[in-house]
Amino acid sequence: MTNEVTSLPETEVTCANCEACCCRLEVMLITDTGVPDHFIKTDKWGGRTMARLDDGWCSALDRTTMRCLIYERRPQVCRDLEMGKDECIAERAAYYKSSPAPIDK
Ligand code: SF4
Ligand code: SF4
Image (cartoon, helix red, strand yellow):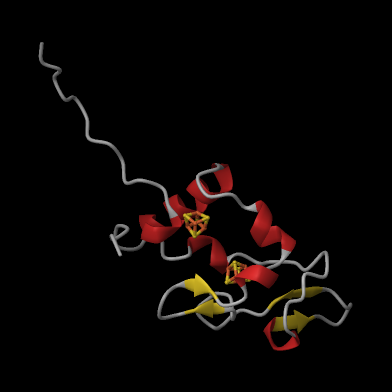
């Protein structure tokens, strides 16, 4: 018996083939996980977020490897965003809509 292939699988959703799309979101610091001060931006009301660079990516992202430099101390918001879940899928879709397709690293 043969099975006709009617569609190809979509690119596997994994951080390994993602350009850290979720690391362009605003990340509020709601608990103390030990993020170093130089990665933190504090607004005039005392609200603390991860500092971002002019292109939108988090300042704690290693731009060579596209991995988090402070993974063990990353904020709770980053811990809660799970690979493959709705928010991850949405961020990937929004990013790759205007950028080249994910590449295998
Ligand atoms: S969690 Fe999702 S959006 Fe974030 S880096 Fe991994 S695959 Fe990309
Ligand atoms: S702290 Fe790490 S995981 Fe969180 S947005 Fe920045 S680089 Fe990404």
